[in-house]
Length: 285
View 1 (cartoon, one colour):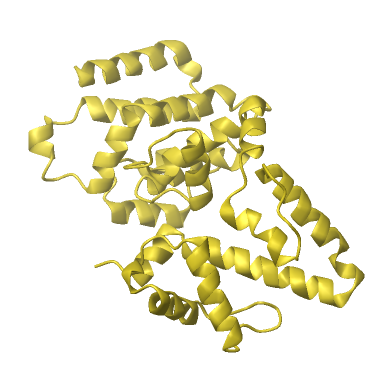
View 2 (view 1 turned 180 degrees about the horizontal axis):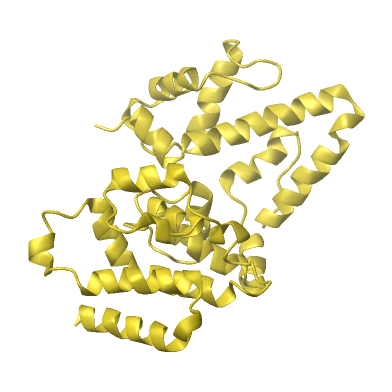
């Protein structure tokens, strides 16, 4: 049944594009045709690379739609979802990467954006993208960096969705900015209000040196918390997700021990050591 769907897509693209197929359309057509002419899945399963399997799964749904969208907007000025660089030629470095991944395609037929999409199929979503998709109710299990990036771009092109996202409740680390600067956090604080308050502090920080130093310490504290809870960082240190309360306890201990310089810079490993000492159960077993 699946090969009939893909075959139908091939015929539709050929009929739609005629003799003046765009470069993107012809690439999508070739990829679909490759899927149609493959041997049965049982014969191919042992020979296909994990990346090739992921590519075919994605191309049977959302990735085909993404590349079709790229074709549709290529000759327009709309770059809200598909950026200009998507249509550039594939780079040598991308070719090497795709060859190493075992991708079974004529790589010269791909654009830079398509190559980037395929590479991202084997990567996890960026933390910022993951937060947005969670807000809109998406389940991230099994979602690739490319799919997350595409769905985020679709939301960002929707003014109503972005207004809703910008006015979401502030995250715990965002609420922490007020006590850090000796102020009381207002009730019902939103992300947008946090951004505006931080921007106001930055605008006036150069009025005196101490204000800039204090703000730089805040940036270091905030960025340190976000980077520590990045999935790759947690995996590197074999840690479970670190709460803001635990992070702040370890931060203060490190500060008292002289492990944080005037600008707020500190050694990540030293902070992690303090976190583990405070709560040994934070380590994955």
